[in-house]
Amino acid sequence: MHSQKKITWAVLSLLIIFFLAMNYLLLKPLVSLPSPLYGGDYYHQLGSTNHVKYGGNPLVSPNVVGSLPIYFVVYPAITGSIAKIFNMDAMAAEFFFSYVILMASAILIFILTQKLFKNYFISAISVLLFISPARMPVIKYTDFAYFVMMPLLLFMVYNFINKASIKNSLFLGGVYGLIGLTHSVAFMASSLLLLSVFLYYGVYSGLFNNSLKFKGNHIDFKKIIKAVLPYAIVFVIGVSIAMLWWFKPIFVFHGQTPAHYSEWNSQNWASLSVQFKFAFDFIKEMFFSFNDLGNGLRSIFSIIGAFGLALVKNRRDSIRYVQFLVVASLIITFHYFITQNLFGFNFIPNYINYLLLSSVSVVLSTFGVYLVYELIKKINLKEERQKNYLVYAYFSVLIILLILAQFKAFNERPKEKWYAAGINQLPLQLVGLKDYLVKNSNVYNTILTTKEIGFAINALTGRKLLVVRRAHNDPFMNVEPRELDASIILYGDDVQAKKDLLKKYDVKYLYWDYYWLQSEYYINEQGQVTGWFDPLIMFYSPEKEATLSSYNISYFKQYTWVDPALKGDTYKQFDLLFISPQNYYNFTHPWKPGLDNYLQEVWNYSSNGNVISRLYKIVNVQ
Image 1 (spheres, rainbow, N blue to C red):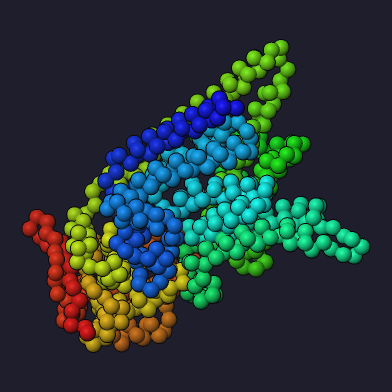
Image 2: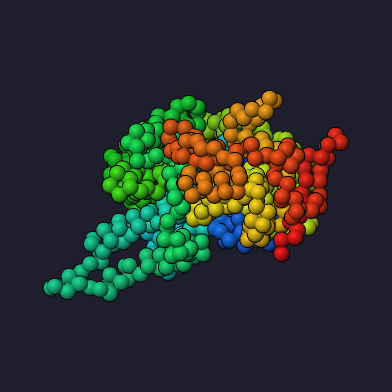
């Protein structure tokens, strides 16, 4: 037994070293994030980390004063605290935490499958099936949920159903609550999974099969209470923790997002073609994905595992748990066939697939590996030693193939478009601006600029914005008034209105750089508008149109998509009002001169003798 433990920890240690080495080699060339600076998810996550580093409350928005964070709490609370405590750059803190995430993920998957299948070689294979360099480095809250929180949940659920003690109830409730502060869809998926646990293990298996006793017409309520109490503890603890974020969405906003919010930024799940395409793509990816070695092995063993679950007669607790996980997670993922078609809502199936079903699918694949192992053990050979050789050969070949698949994914990762972006330095004017703002401003100070430039400023400093990218803001905040008010401040004729609005939003700075025009519209050398990126826009209404006209602000109406990154047949289009580039006063001074009454230049950056960015402090508005 002692030797078995040594081998187990040796195998796990080698796996951890292997993945940490890959993570290091992928991080080493990066001087910025492998993501677009303007609008990239990783940079919004960096803004959340900087928000916490410079003193911001992780429970409030990192980019808009007075709203909720759209990227959830746990990840930036950890990375921001690391950056703050050790006086590290926020990006370096995220890179460091990537090592911690991968190590924790390997340990969790290894221990979970060790409990289920009682073989350290199978556990090693499960880790190689789950973790891939294709997802390294891990620098976003969604991937943190995928790599750590969901495997931790599956582990805690297994402990809980095997022994529903007070300790296990508290642990499971704590993990459930933390998931509620980690990712919104992960919380929905976890809630549905725990409901399934209660219905199957608590009600069906626990009450009806074991605890529900009739004495004449009398029900033994003491046994019912004893059976239900652990689930109640999980619910109370989990929900209490999760309410730190979820209280306002549920009890203040009553789950109501602004008009059109759920339409413009999500796929059209009401379409049957979208519903069936998603199901078809899932089946193809899980069982028939042979585009590379790693996916091919996962598919083969998923098929074996699926047949095994249907045919295997072994009903020990661990196999029963695998069966439960697969069935429950499939029902949870494909819930939309019922909820969307009958009631008109869904829980974002594509994210549930990634966060819940991906973890469960690895358990299914590992079960397939386990079944082949069990078949090999039943082969009738003359000597037991020959059977052992066959088992070791099976595991050795499988591990070698998976390691080769890991190296292939590792070699492909640097070829990806946005990974290459991380090798380039950040724009020097933004680096200089960051240094100035960190020294001279507060993390809650609000800056007025274009949405895309503001996105980059927030990423590097954690400072707040008047207008933001729609895809990266509090889902319960109506951004329409902000876009309209920013238009009046920048391009309206009423000087007093500008002053009042600057005071209303407590704007501290206005920032301009050479990218201002390009961040909103594509303009060729002849001065013609050839397209749009992310300008000030509003959903059309006669009232907004009248307001723009009253302030002499040029605009045009167009039926198109809301977000520059979410276009195509699966996304809905709307009648929108665009703040026209005809409003630009000139290239270096896009706003109308009336705003200059409230501006005082405090910093600028020059390149080749030309000023390419300026920061103005807002003055004379009190």
